[in-house]
Amino acid sequence: MDVKTTQQLDNIIGGCAEALNNKLSGADGKRAVLLCGGTGCLSSHSDEIKAKFEELIQQKGLADKVTVNLVGCFGFCSQGPFVKIYPEDTLYRLVKIEDVEEIVDTDLINNQVVERLLYVDPSTNEKVQKQDDINFYKKQKRVALHGCGVINPEDINEAIGYGAFKGLEKALTMTPKEVIDEVLASGIRGRGGAGFPTGRKWSFAYANDADQKYVVCNGDEGDPGAFMDRSILEGNPFAVIEGMMIAGYAIGATEGYFYVRAEYPIAVNRLQLAIDQMTEMGILGNNILGSDFSFMAHIRLGAGAFVCGEETALLNSIEGKRGMPRPRPPFPAVKGLWGKPTVVNNVETLACIPYILREGAADFASTGTERSKGTKVFALGGKVNNVGLVEVPMGTTLRELIYDIGGGIPDGKKFKAIQTGGPSGGCLTEEYLDEPIDFDNLVAKGSMMGSGGAIVMDEDNCMVNIAKFYMEFICDESCGKCSPCRIGTKRMLEILTKITDGKGTMQDLEDLEELAEAVKNNSLCALGQTAANPVVSTLAHFRDEYLAHIVEKHCPAGICKKLMHYKIDRHKCFGCGLCARQCPVKAISVSDYTAPGKRKPALIIDPEKCIKCGLCRASCKFGAIMKE
Image 1 (cartoon, rainbow, N blue to C red):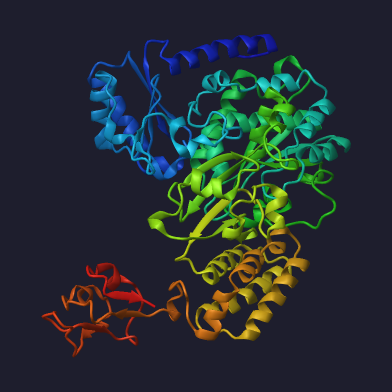
Image 2: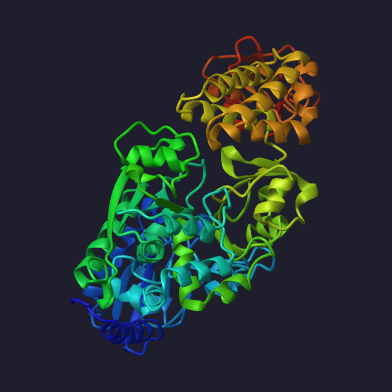
């Protein structure tokens, strides 16, 4: 269908909305089975689970009574794969292929809930049937994740039924300047990390006359543990394309480029399918909805370089050059892609734009804090019970994020720190748990929002080793263009390695702090300018751990292998020999001591032979092996 007018689109919107509502409410006389089709659940065989549903539904004569679709990420990754059944809104978690027949027979045929597959609230031990009643979801608000987990991301009609293109339609009734003013009024700031006001960036590009302008979507998500942009593209690619089109209309651009890392094949495939469907329908192309606005979208694949998340390095990569940052000014809004004015926004930012135009700037600005409006998506991971994708209002506290939504720390361990902002951020300790999350507040506390990675650490994490991990990542990902980043981060890594190996000195601490300042102040781009943040923040909050490594030659968390020793408590050891049989280097032998009440002599570990693999400790049934 070629949609040429807003009236035609309105007719389609009405029909699609009715069809989707009928599907989810059961008004079409059918049950709807939705399965999580995000990368995480697909890796746990949700596509095979879908195939099994389709096979059994056909076998049992339910083909005219049940529909089955893959949708986007449900967010609660530690409980996936998910199966959701409408109209009852029943949510099953940790579903396996062998569970499908029971769900079909018990629920789809006999209308009985499969109790054992329901989520169990750990605080009450009660089973929870509906998604919105689970604590993980209660404090969330989906704006950027609009439609994810509800619509089939490969079906434009379902996207339209859930509100797609209403924002674009409204934008085309406004002047470009009015659209920019609406975005400015919303207060939205870039979700890619820097937090620069999106409307101001658009204003700069709008003010520059040129025969060609571009909009670029930064989907080069490189932070360790981050998967926000990937999930948005997998769950509702139409919203991101719509956001790009609105940006294009506002600044006077007719072409857009999606820069997505090649390691995201599902996101890339669904994005391309969405572009194809929108082009076929006439929503992408020339004279969109009968207006003078024309727009085309293209996809470029990134090779996985972290530095290409920096906007000027990304532009170089699109142009076929090596992904290295450019000096600024001029900024991309003045001289960007192929020397033309260019707006670069990340996936989450563009996904919020249709909401702002559709619901109004005031609605968006009503959520959040004074200087940080709207919501923010976080990839919550690490030492937390509820790992997953979370979208919360700005101003939500770290305590709410970690304990109310994240479910706290596993195994009753003590919270130690949360690293926000990935390699560019810093760690925040227990004293900051009641701080509201927003752009400025996190920076003031020594960290940053970043793109939304949030890694929780407990008492078993070594903070010196954490700093070393992030510095290893930065060294690997530095493009090498400027010497402060190329050489300075390498020297910092060497010092951190010395410290974790037990060879550090007090002079090394002074050198580390001096290098951190030099790298921060003299690097060309944000990768180098923020590279030292994990080191600076761990030194500020956990200096005692650095001193323990240097002065005592001891790792308090027992993580740094060259400072770690395994020892057998001879009073607890029964001499069973299981640990000795597990040891790959035969470092465990029989001692000459037999504890009172024991029939066999205790075993002993030779520290010279031990490679600290931990297999002995894992195999001991009596808790006789300690890590020191």
